[in-house]
Length: 133
Image (cartoon, rainbow, N blue to C red; front, top):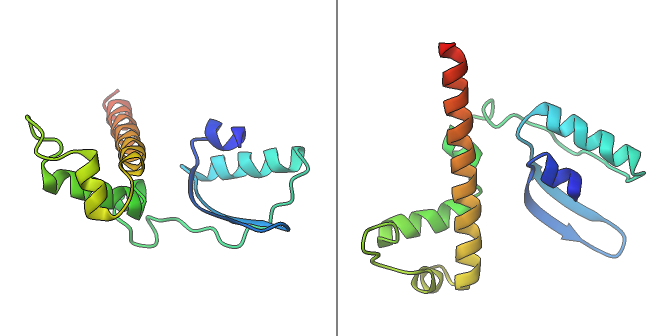
């Protein structure tokens, strides 16, 4: 799991039984996937990759590639409900009630989503800066 955190990999789905686990990950790039596979080999962790695809080639917009559907749902409810207005027009409890999830889940999804958007913005700014240099 440390390898996933170090590589900034998003875990989109995780399902397990007593015998095996299935995961759906989002890697920031192909190099991260290769590094993760190498870390699994070094740790003697069996890995069976079922599918690898590029979200850009699949027709997803940059926004769709950045957020999970659950994160997008929470942010949409927050924006539409006025969570980011000053003063706030809603709160995490109300958003949770609207989405039928706990306020803790709302907060966690919102923090993850905002972190992903912030990282994407910083990376985009850095790329623009590199082009200008």
